[in-house]
Image (cartoon, rainbow, N blue to C red; front, side, top):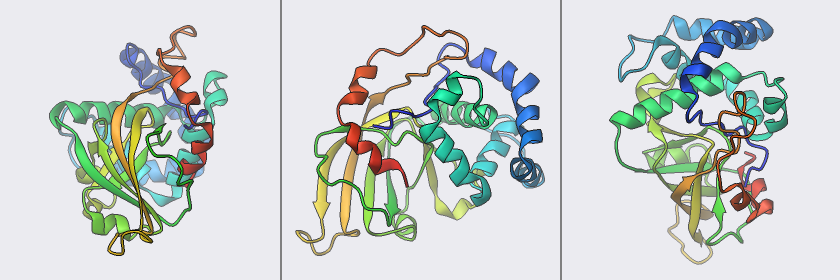
Length: 247
């Protein structure tokens, strides 16, 4: 269940975190990583005028996230560096916040839930029917199943997300019809289908995930050490399922 996820949703501290990012973290983190700085500068030269209540930095963050040089390192840190986040040694405070806030702002104009697809070539535990799970990272999915199949057709997901936002207009790869799912969204596994039982299945195994809520154990952690979202115990339902979301 991605127990070590950096899952802050900044509920109640958005303005404080925005100020911290703009006055401290962004400049510090850009100067600490040549790759991040280069990706940020490229994004500055390729983003359009802000829309949908987003700022230029939000657009840059989306573009940087979809840069393959940044994607894996950043998401590994989101998925597993909870302690570093709490200990003030996390290297991605600014990008994490800007992506989270941008997704939340887009959700205000993109009302309703979305059916999306995610394809992988990574093998996962199949014994998860009816379990509650989460990806624990910023997770890319697509409105177009054909796009998802291009990323893998071994273990795949049909996702009904109520927290994810369409970001194709701001992506480095707009043709991917991307919907970006935040790390704090939880899902119930409502079906697990296998090609051995259904010959025309689009992947060898397909997990159907239905949005079930949110868990943000680190909510506003930088500002209130006692402010934990109720329900963290739910994370312990199926610890072994964490392996499912390490791709």
